[in-house]
Image (cartoon, rainbow, N blue to C red; front, side, top):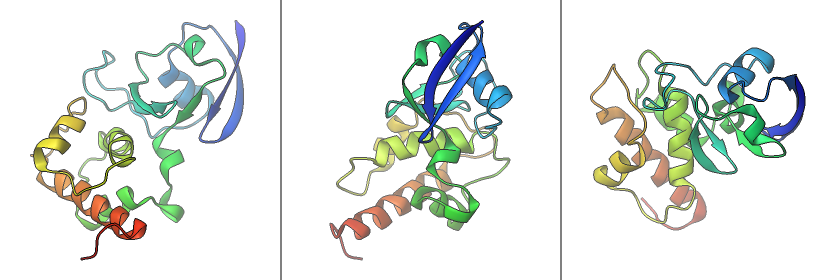
Length: 163
């Protein structure tokens, strides 16, 4: 057992556990942050995606010992029902969620993708950005449209475009 310190969603956490425990398991079991889901356990589906220092990672592949003094953002840190992010609002408005299992990981990947966007992304750009995220319920049309809608809203807020 080792005492490990790291920040999740802006809050410093200290957890005593084996450093080989996955970040996903610590988030879900020790910190009760259950938005990230375990699906494949091999980093192929993206359901467990979180931001590690602003970069998308599969938390099922990251060992908690690797995140000592690092910054993690989960879907809960992007927004909750009472304070949803533009991306989350767009997913709701566009009906881009179905079972919801993959949605948190896609929201996280979308947040990272749209962070520095200066235009409304094309379908191909979005497909590339979401290449590590699988949805088994849909053909991605509504997800792609929701991301484009979020980009438009984000650019409008910055005053970059007018619609």
